[in-house]
Length: 145
Image (tube, rainbow, N blue to C red; front, side, top):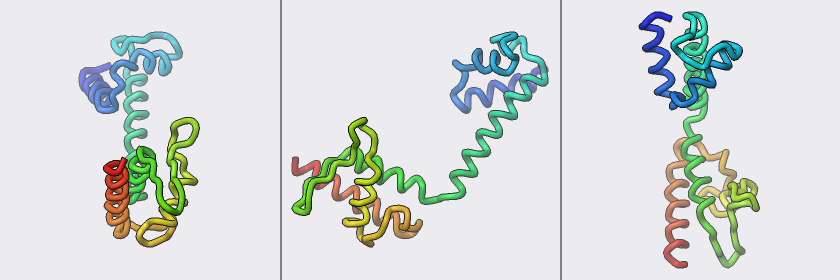
């Protein structure tokens, strides 16, 4: 492979934090022929570069499709780290495998969210206020325990 291809390959491997996995990637691309980037042909190196660029493009497209996704994930993360006890009942947001219990989270947002609607129905203008509300609820219950 030529030096410009090599630079592009290593730049993408670093960007995707795959430098430690490059041996396995080389083995996969070469069908087990080599685990060294030094022994890659130009075509094999370009195939890795194209795969990494495709992966990057798909991630960017996913982020563009739903600008609210990050705010929803933040709400889920906050609730997953909180146990809330109210007069109307106790809310536990982790399942038996210590993963976010999505039915409980959805139910809590629909009942206690400021617009009283499902989490995925909040739009990009409503979600910041919901994030703030959930942060305040979590802080108040952490302070009281």
